Image 1 (cartoon, rainbow, N blue to C red):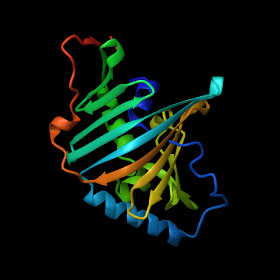
Image 2: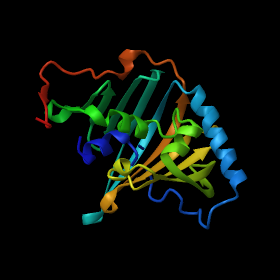
Image 3: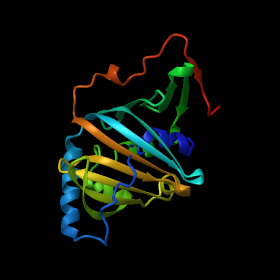
Length: 236
């Protein structure tokens, strides 16, 4: 699966807002402070079964120095460790829906009544790792996959948070993601994420009206398509 497809699903930019750590600076913070934030994430991750939220994204393309913004809603459900489902419904400025289930990612473009289907194949574990960053994340898993640094405290959308910098340890992941900055609220969940991609591109995502572990039926995370929809398979 090519990087642009993965980036579109991650919703980094999961998920996005101009400069996530704009007021945070300086060197590494005392280890005890990092431990406190990681313990908060660990506790939240153990209880995570799903979420719903509004999302606003900014996607920056470095080569032309251009920002594109969109907004909508996101639903994420993990019924059990091997069953992760996601639905992102972007409504502004151009409608688009992204659905992930099993090994398949569907991009639905209602204006042209077209669905593009991608089989993530071997990228499934990598994609799920991106989607669950900050949601259902364990401290052990986070530190096993990333070099984690506490940047410092900040305030986003009126909420106090702590910004973490995550640098992937895996060379495979580094091909897709250079680093991530994640602003973690007091409840242990991120309210902003900024994903940095090779070449200077990034995605910045901001969540609002977040609800943790809402009652989400499986039907709520399925694409509901019109009868005349055209299905394409760009990988073939």
